[in-house]
Structures are given as C-alpha cells and as structure tokens.
Image (tube, rainbow, N blue to C red; front, side):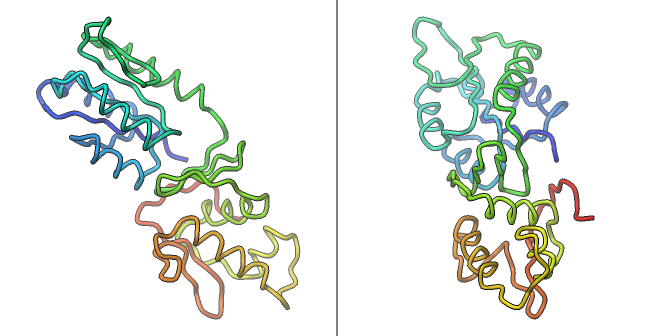
Length: 227
C-alpha cells in the first residue's frame, strides 16, 4: 500500500514553494490552484489529507475551506491561515497561523493520519476502509456487505490481473463450484454501480469473456497478490 496522498491547494509558487517542498519530501503530493479544481482531483484520487495554503493565495480561505468540507466530508483538512486569529472561521481539522514551520505542518498531518488510522486499502482512485466496511469512490462513501468487501478486496489486491470465476468463487464464497455463478454476476454488477461512472460501459472492472473479470487501473497501488 502506498503512502498517504496529500492534496495541496496554493496559487503563488514562490510563496508556497517551502510548503510544497516540505510535503513532497514525505508524501505523494497532488497540487491544485483552486478549491474547485481540488475537489475534482480529490474525487479522482485517493486523497487522505488536503492542505489549503491560503497564505500563498493571499486570502483567508475560510470560504474555500467550507466548500471543501461540504464536498469532501471524509477527508482531513489542514488550513494554513494568514490570520489574524480573531477573524478565523475555518472548518478545517487543523488551522496553522502564519508563519508555518515545516515541523508544525508535518506533525499536524501525521496526527490526522493517526487519528484516522483505520485499516485502509488504497487502489488507484478508490479507497476501502476495511474497519468500517466503506468504499470511497467518486467522492461518495458507500457501505459494503461482507461479501462485497471480500470481492472488492480481491480485485484491489490484484489490479490489472484477470481473475477467473473459479478463483473468485473460492476467495469470496469458499467454494470451487462454478455450475451457477449468478451470485457472482450480481455482485459484479453491484461493484460496477459503485465505482463506474457508466456501469453499462465499465472503465475499470472489465469482463474477460469466457474467463472472468479484471480491474484495470491507470495507476497501480496494489497490496498483496493472490498466492
């Protein structure tokens, strides 16, 4: 599993360079220059923490932070605020006032990651919270049944590999009987409805005719393959 992804929002490279450099040394970082763009990127990627560098944007950033909180309720927010303290109306999990030292920023992020240290499985733009049995995809949180969780774990830990029907039946339903796989087909349909923009034309979970299914991803963030 890869390190936690951080989404950094900032607009002035010279002012925000130290923040960006600090984050890049420790995490995979995605950057955006506006709250709107950040929300789109967060929906497309498995982002754990958003850092709003309002200092570099020369704005308090309280309104942007409110929009982020509404659109990304499960993502932790760190707000680098220009102050003054009395005027802050931020909805972020952590607010750091100017000047922000690298150590304070990193400590804040690590604290947030530890607070949300549920058993997460990250794969491409998707996240499964195994502790809470939740799928995070396309900006939505969807509860999973135990069988849905097992099926998705099987695909997420074997991205871009074709998994035949017998293997899927063994891993999820503990049987090698494939005389009737309608239950598997129904679960595949449910998974597609959760992760695909258009389930009838799947971009990720593909059918391999006569064999089984394959989870295609542009970026492979795999855990442990099948034995």
